[in-house]
Amino acid sequence: MAVPGAPTGPGSLLSLASLTPCARLAAGCIPAGRQRSPVLGMEARDVPVSVPALATEPRFTQRLREHLEEEQLLDGRYRLQEVPGGRVALPVLEEKLPQLRLPQEMPCELVRIQDPVPSRAARRQTPAQKLRDELRRLLGESWSEELERDVPRAWQRHGDLVLLGEDSFRAAPWEKLGPALWETVASALGARRLARRGRVLPDGMRSPSISLLLGQDGWVEHVDNGIRYTFDVTKCMFSPGNITEKLRVASLPCSGEVLVDLYAGIGYFTLPYLVHAAAAFAHACEWNSHAVEALRRNLALNSVQDRCRIHHGDSRQLELWDVADRVNLGLIPSSEEGWPVACRVLKKGTGGVLHIHHNVETFPALAPPQTLALRSESGYPEGAGSDGEAQHPTEDGGKETLGARIRPEWQRWAEATAARIRGLLAELHGQPWHTSILHIEAVKSYAPHVHHLVLDLECRPTLPT
Image (cartoon, rainbow, N blue to C red):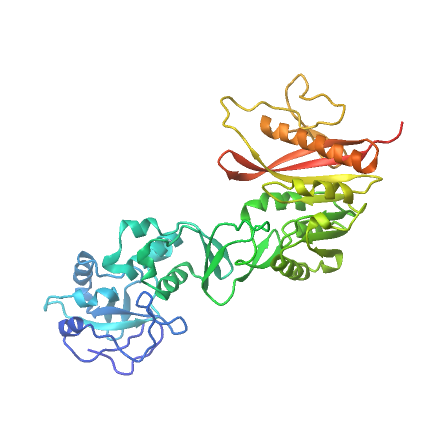
């Protein structure tokens, strides 16, 4: 029987009207007086969760469980729990209560378990499995293979915001669910806000096309290698695929150096140079006003705002000369439009290092790629020594180590870029310069047979003989 005035802590019951079990179940009675959410039959987020259950005597527990499993009515997300009166409560799927019929010889009472305990199976579920299962419960008989294929298996998480891929939830039936769909997805993934990625806009700023699906704004905070980044995901790009390059930049020996970052964005590379690589000062150039706002916040978040000057506008019009020990050109698919500016801002008396980003097409190899020399200077022969291994000069004292295998297309691009930069510097200063390929870094695969590369190119004026 119901227990009037029962406590409301975890595992306690909210009693129903005194109907016979089958009559209550057929009527689909659910206790009133608690705020309801359209999602998953759960309580609203700011109210403790309760779920329907059948309470029976311990001697009937196994038989009742087998019956519920056979009818696919047992809610496997939650554990069986002891409840007042020495009974055991078996959680059931709320959306299937009208279908529930029990033999009279199996006495039980429909109750609600307040704050149910998740089952071991539920705790072992991957987020993708949990998302799929919650959506199946939401859709019920409308679930289909088409919808299952449309459920994402991967996403980006930024704090309490989950960013879905552009192909997620595009099938027409999802639209009929309205806000309940996004509430369900957020609940399953443990998020408060949702957004969906679109294609990068062809506006010259690589602006994202991202729709906010749930929540009031898109500002998030992300931590990479101890550096805090905040940005609006609906206005600014953030590429987790560049993490290896950010880690590499953080390890470069930049103490006392002045950096010019021609495409700073929200500070993807500016901040590692300042925070970890110990650059003395940075000039950060950016023309996207949304990224500039995020960059200002990020410099302050990481307490380096006094060591950076932001130049808001087109970096091709940058009014700087002869200031940089190092220039970062982090724009893909090509940073070539910034090469003349990079040459102009390098210190004309001592030169410096350019970090040139570029997407390079790599044709499928019929044989293992040839190992080629990474070092290529004006007056140096192409190719390697007699052993065929690439020599890989480092930046700390000229110590050489064996390099990785470099694909021929990468080497050709690096050598052509070095020659072009050499020409720009000679034309600018009216004297010869030499360029040395220090390193070619493969950041990531950008598209089939296209790799995002970074060329570390040392540029020095030729001393008079």
